[in-house]
Amino acid sequence: MVNTEKFIKAAIEEIRREAGGRTVVIALSGGVDSSVCAALAARAIGDQLHPIYVDTGLMRKGETDRIRELFGHLSLTVVDAREEFFAALSGITDPEEKRKAIGERFIRVFEREAKRTGATVLLQGTIYPDRIESEGGIKSHHNVGGMPLECAFEDVIEPLRDLYKDEVREVAGALGLPREIQHRMPFPGPGLAVRVIGEVTAGAIEVVREANAIVEEELVEAFAPWQCLAALVGLGTGVKGDVRLHGWIVAIRAVNSRDGMTADPLELPFEVLARIASRCTSEIPGVARVVYDVTPKPPATIEYE
Image (cartoon, rainbow, N blue to C red; front, side, top):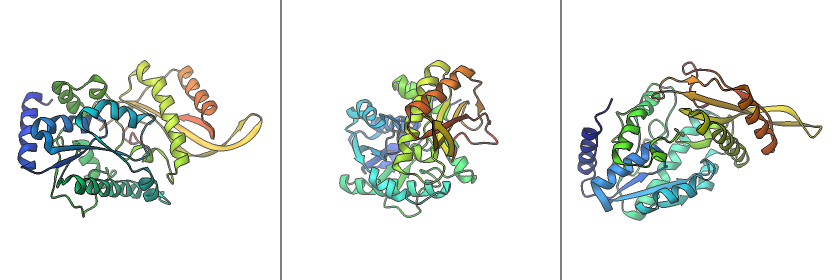
């Protein structure tokens, strides 16, 4: 496990040294990784730091408003880039191409914001599993393998690059971050786009956003999974109000893990699964059926794409 006191001191020194006197922008998503980076950078370089939250349109229900509440004290800039991201994803069905399109768009948004603020350095919350999965060809993370080779930043600082998720949580606690942030469930950098199999549309994202909200409401407090989610995995037939429906198939995933490198599915009571299925099919128009994924990692990944 990481020596948090030693790590925090070294990370602050690294950020200060790498930044020099330059202005730095950080991609602040509200997850534990980027939040720890922001806290470290605030201590290291103070007013040289410009935190930016990009509303991609691919976030969880109520996410943008909650981020404003949690990080407004850091002079957070919120960028509405929803139309840009949906346009970038239009017509794309391949998972890797989706991740690369999102990575490209993220960088372009940050380049634009950097020009506005005079920033020449990008700070990111890349952690060790991101690097392993990207470099090993498992999948590209938008902040590693999905990053375009050509970008306008002079340097990219990644102080968490050698830490696992559980170690990042330890650092978050040592920094005094709120428990809501320290123990926040992992959420993919590309957002809900990787929870829609096939083309990402605004309509599909609305469906999967509502399904994820239901899954989190039913499972997070009661079962404390390491991660739980809902994904749209295709279309199937169903019946609603005695009318035949050709609608979405929602797959539910709930796992426990230590560091995200391996994961085991939760053995959930049938009545809980039945309640989630009932809520998804009755509360979300267009959902025809719900299934529960019991595949461990490996051979599966936690996310669907």
